[in-house]
Image (tube, rainbow, N blue to C red; front, side):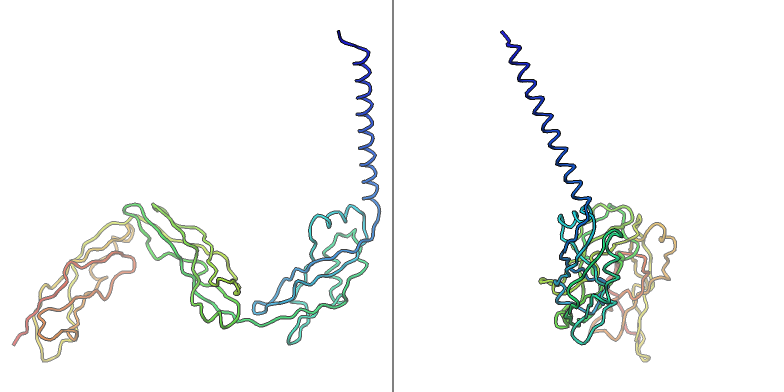
Length: 318
């Protein structure tokens, strides 16, 4: 049988305990709020974040810090306990000598104050002076090469070589290292079954394993126009060059069938006049009875050019 008296007694005790905990929590909250709304003076160490450092300069001692005494409400100071605070120093405004940039609290106080809330008062900045040693690096502009694998759906191809933007990047570092690098490659990218224009970004691969060089760009864009292609066949006249004035020859064939592929948009503009096939008589080997044809001119907008004849037979005329 349920003992209602004990049950009610237990319920009342538990209720009193819950009320006590609620009041205790409220008291703690009010206490914290009271403390946070009170003015405090606190000395905090700030790391240095350099900006606007000239490209050809490397600073060796930015690990220094600034100690700043602040006066403000506790609410404003709480955030400094949850992360490492930093102060920005604009190196383009600093004086320098042959070996060091020179920061002075007197000169940079307005910049320091501007980085705090208006309700935070900066009462002191230490030390008075910081010296940042620096060195001079070499800057070199090098081309970017795309490390890519691109496959197209049947009949599709690029209308022009893939464009890389920017097509070159700046490297900064010691001259001995810079001189060994002539290009920067992208990370390998694979694009499969392409049937539309290419427009993608790819990260650059750092050219130095120890990363002692600074690479000013981290990625480039790859862009290419893709169109449907068709095959074409044209008969191109053969031209014999460098034949001595005292020599007369007959040759065969007079024309060579040339196959090529071109985009549907460009195909209608391509004619035999866009190609030139030449045989250089001065390249003739002793006792040879044939000349080797070469394509010396062709439109930039065609691909996969192939001659269907590899030799031009000839005879000398007496």
